[in-house]
Length: 492
Image (cartoon, rainbow, N blue to C red; front, side, top):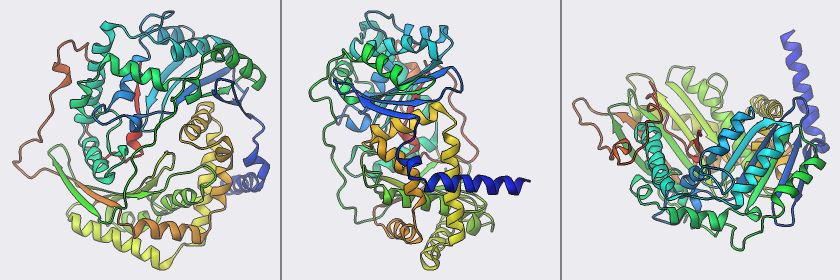
């Protein structure tokens, strides 16, 4: 019975993928733009009387100027400090009092705010979100206290986690010139100098309808969504110069780089190798699709992937994986991670990984494995359609990184069309690249001193009550990949 169900599901996936109308024009997705430039995407799903509102601003930490790291994330926090209509913190209190939830997150390329609430309360949250798009107020008593909050967030999430600290070192080595090499949350010494004026200047420049995407997903019709969007957002004026400026780009990287970091909190060595690769681009997603399939084929499963079968299942590694996420404005990273078995040296483990990758280039793609991986990816995308929040995120992230609604719609079909040759071209690009950083995070030698620690933010004057205990160090920490590091979420 289970085999029959799997077969029927596979057939359903195939039918969805070969139907052009499914990819090009989903009947439940609408897209329009207001006169002030606000992009609006509506995803109808009336299975439950619930709706998600997301507002994405097309600006993130990679748009910060040197010396002001952490500013985008800092303003994200300050956006909850009220307007002329709402007192500090009242936004989230109103959402909660009406049975909803809200939050926000900052990335290299975007900053987003969202609420999930009963559909009959949608006008309420739209009015409040539009209000803070145009009328944010930051009191003198708020900006310093909130700066201490983000410093404490860094202390908990980054300074207290060797994997996160190693991720910062690795990203800085991977990106020689591009601001993706700086942490989203910011460098501590620069975060300490952020001011109210810095935050207001960022808000005044970038927070505008012509630099934003409104995504509504759930129990709302396209007609009603247009009426509400026009009512609450339509009168907000566009701003000249709100679009992001051109960023510094990476030069040709001709030399591979290596780094090692030791920390007494690390129980066993872990390797991360990142490779500079193309991102998803509007109208040109073929290479990104091949990289997506390649990552899943090489390291998506501990049991069935190439690395899983050749390293993990043979006892040569405790874990081995690969990953890629093309949602980025500029070139991003493909990565491999590896945790060697006890007693194996880093040199031996890395040699085994390189041998498997070179053998893959020699042997080529197993067609059955490729079909299996593409079916798995397609199934995951179909399952994702069951979540209104997930679909809102998909379209919001796509448009915020420069894709079009059509690009997002076409993505499943492009993935399904990936060929053996496409995968092998992507593999050669990755394995033979010189734009690589191989890093090892290792336990400190016995008797070694603890690594130097930055000043504890919790000890700073004016620090509010502790916001929570630091995250525990995992038994086998996996250093943050560039994709992992792209979002700093704040709970209000």
